[in-house]
Structure formats: structure tokens, C-alpha cells
Length: 202
Image (cartoon, rainbow, N blue to C red; front, side):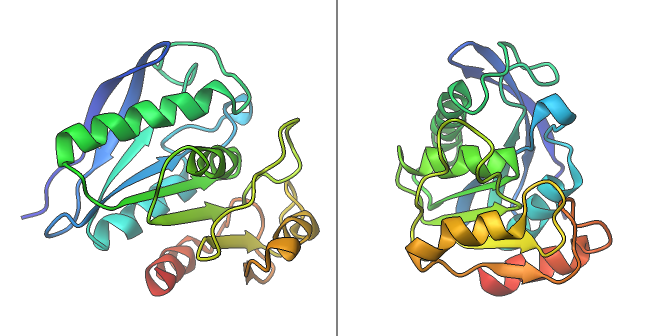
């Protein structure tokens, strides 16, 4: 029998963080925290790319935590352009480990959420990192370098974050980028393919 998703509130540094928890399919083998796109453009934890990644990771045995970061939905606080949001994610990780134990940790994010996840990875050890349509070059703080085994997926026709910007960021790191031909920023019509790629490359 499939376990149902839950909606919980997690204590964050500036108040509660409204969070969706999607249980692992079968035995739980890891924890995944997946970050949403830019809330100033409507990004929340119900975004289709975030949900697609969560479902794929849950099928790989991860229990997935999808927080609405500060100022989003019913989460308290004010949007902080990727700064305080790092602390929010660290709070979610701590809560998840309290609930699940010291399981392998995966970090993931889409667009702004990818920027946040990459910054969180500088602060905490994680076994895996997944960046989809990562928001390179959009913020005062540059997107940090990431581990060599990071899975980076980007649309060739991304109208928000140009593929050229991601390649310029990845090139000095010798970091491979999986490119979806003709795909835009939101992977419209390509979500099934996105899920399959995550599961294949994981």
C-alpha cells in the first residue's frame, strides 16, 4: 500500500515552514530536500518541476521534504533572495534527520531553488545534488561551484536562464550538463522525460 503525502509545519529560523512530505516508495533509503523556484514569480512547493523531481526521487527510496521557504504560502518570514532561505533548508534537514535518522541526504532545486540548494551544499555534507534550470547569474551572490557528480539538467531553449550562462558556470568546473533539446525553463511537455532522466542518472 502506498503511503500518503503529509503536510507539516517545521520550525524555521524566522517561524514555521509549511512543508509537503512525500514518503519513499518501498523502504526508505535516503532523505531528499527539494527547493522551489523564485516566489516573486509565483514559485512554491507545488511547482510541477519540483513535484516531478520529488516523485522520481521517492520512487528511488527517498522520503522527500518540499518546504515553502520563508514568506511563501503559509511559511512565516519574508523572502530573502536566497540568503535566509539557506538557513530555512538547514532547519528542514535537521527536522528530517530527527524524523528519519541519519540516512543519506540529497539536495535538489529548480531555478531559484537550485541556487539555494547549491549554497546549502556549501554548508552541509550531501551525498547527491540535483539542479534543474539552476538560476545562474541572477543574484548578487554567485552560484557556487558544486561537486563533480552533481546532476545538472537544463533546457536548450530556457528563456529565463540562458543555457550559455549555465555552460559558462559549468565549464571551469569540468561539470557535465544534461541538455534537453528545445526545452524551455519549465520543461513544458517534458516532465515525464525529466523524471526518467533523474532516475536513469541517479
